[in-house]
Length: 345
Image 1 (cartoon, rainbow, N blue to C red):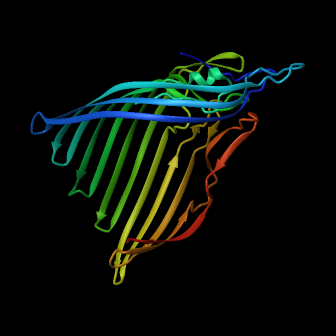
Image 2 (cartoon, one colour; image 1 turned 90 degrees about the horizontal axis):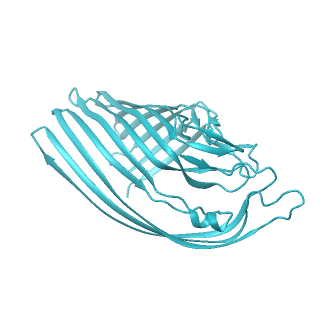
Image 3 (spheres, rainbow, N blue to C red; image 1 turned 90 degrees about the vertical axis):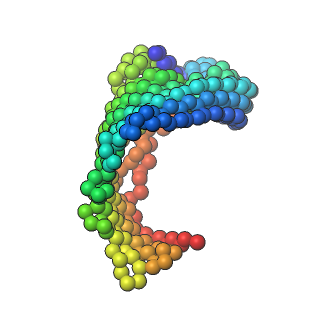
């Protein structure tokens, strides 16, 4: 698939001063049924029909890319666009579940997904306003298990999956101009998830999760900075490969209520943050909390600390729309302490 991004204009600029409105009329009908084939094996089938109509209007002034150059006056295009689009889709789900024992369940799911198209709210031409973008489709296969072991003191759940996207909707920022959304490529996401919790005593619970995601473009050729670039096999932006979280909670009864001690730790791998392959680095954070719960469970008082070790990190990084050479980083909150009061009415 060839996706042309207007990312390069030697002398031109692109901009917009447009107001827009979108009115959406959505209707869906769905159903699902399950049947036990045997005492241990069950099947589930489902279907969903969706119909969405979007009425879009945009008025204002746009500056098409390349409309200004040495000796040429600035050319502004008056935008007065009104259009309506309707999308329909029927998606299906099929699942099997098998009880290995009273404490272990295996399952298989095959599902389809649909995301309707839309319109860009800051077009620079009437053609841009009327064109919009098309729906996105997904198909997912998942195989997993759920288990409660050792008198339900140990829980281990896991899944492996693969999701194929067709006509993936992505946001792009041209070298100079307004961000826009377009159908860019096909993509494949494969990975696994593992969740676990252990209660060695009635008062103590240790839990965590680990996830791995391989998210790559499959059919993606982009025209940027005056040349074609094949991006097949490149990572999708905003998705870390590895994520891990750990938590522990201890509940201690006292004569006048309950004390709850809790700690949480999360680590996330680096992520591609935008189409220019700028990376948001890996980060980790530790949070602590101590809560006093009243004897009647009517109110609680908590003292907490977030980002205990004052880690400096950011989750989002990208080019300035008006100055692509500059990078904007949105820092996450630093070390923070506080007290919270909660009342249950």
